[in-house]
Image (cartoon, rainbow, N blue to C red):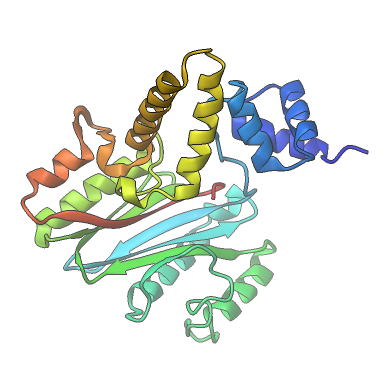
Length: 291
């Protein structure tokens, strides 16, 4: 009996854009392990990258708000089962109220990747009790499961800016240190717009040192196996892998990325132009249907 299902094959195809037979082979070779199958396809050169879309089957809306002084901001992702409900005015108003509740909560700081069981879900929300209670009641009225999936609240360092795409499906919150006022808010919003666009790819960290070690090691394994097929000497292979890792960092590190509006400049250039001491402290990017 196969260690995978047709659904697994479909998911792997979505994540890698590889052919059906290649996906089946990858799953067979890796006993149905999805992540190992992705890595196997990449080592074989069948999949260049990984499209993570489709891993969460959901619809919904992303909403961001910030305080008038631009020092604090919040972003939330509220999910529904269908896009029809996500476009409902009441659904949008509920998402706005949740963002406002989060923004006013001075005890919340950072990104919460799973809202279930969180402090925000237990917070007072209107006249219905907690936010969790309100969402259960909303679910009953709408007839669809309404879920607060994740959220983030930044503040206290300098300036915060947010950008949400006009369709409400993807948005980013950015916090800067060393700058405040209108100039800081505008720079943070500009960087948030860049991150939201996801060009050339969605960044995974602000600096190279922040890129998770396991991601770097995975790329190193893949590059090493690919380079080994060239038949070149070990010292040459080492240089080839080093070059590929450097390219990888430039692709996934926010500061190294070329600015989406002018690729002659990097995001690092924009930050430097803002003055000495200015830096990107953190960012949170949410997209409906993706991790």
